Image (cartoon, rainbow, N blue to C red; front, top):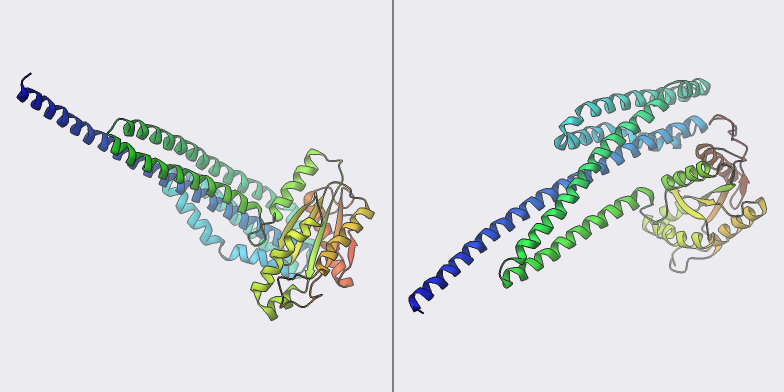
Length: 398
């Protein structure tokens, strides 16, 4: 065999291999760029969903504050309303800009959403003004006769439509990411061993990105229904569980206990908020252990709630209340600066369906019972009055 022709053929094979390697590298780079673009769009979609949820949460907080103020006249209920409305316009503007950047066709629904929200905010402001001027009955009529509830339902419907469109985009992007990974794998398998090794390292990074996205999704879902400080379920999850219970088994009994801590504010003032936060973190598992089989919820600040679905007789609820109060009487050895007996609590108890046939009535009844117990002194409990068929401002203590 001619050596020159052999060398020439070897050089030709080498040149072809190098050319193939360059082509494969270009294809791989192109796949990588498309993957990164899809990933960036997927992250944008996740942020868009988060902003929509935050917008809805602000509206719900404002409405909760409005209803609490109309029910009780206590200005403390205005705080969630004021917090939500204080930055609402800016949040609505930024959410709209974020959505329009990726979805210009959302301009119409966003305009409709803005009009509904403005109308809802006017309705809430009117009822609060009437209540503040001493005309609680007119405020209630305005809330019941107005179209605030219809506005809220339409707002949820529009937001659900927008979020469904974003979720559909995320699903398509997930498929694109899978396609990019698969094609990149085939390209990497067709090149030299050293390049395959480098591709393996790249694939490992891609798997890490996928896991990070999955973990982010799980964390966002968890944070929307759990308290950040204690890790306990929050008010939203309590409302969801009550809605499920009352909807799926309308004749099944359950009970809601509102537990209001006493002594936490002096601890925050004298020992620092870090100590107060640590108190809440340590109390959470102890309270949960004292109520096995129940759902323990941190409502806000120094208030917790317990949802019981097993034995909800009055005797059992009294025993359960005693166990909770006993937890507070037990020292926390990890917190040496805190004096013994620094913590106490009062408890309000409401039973379904005796004290309320809807989650709203049941929660309101338990809250009112807690306030009555607090006025009676530390370590007391009170059962709620019957609010099952009453308007939300009926049955309130004078």
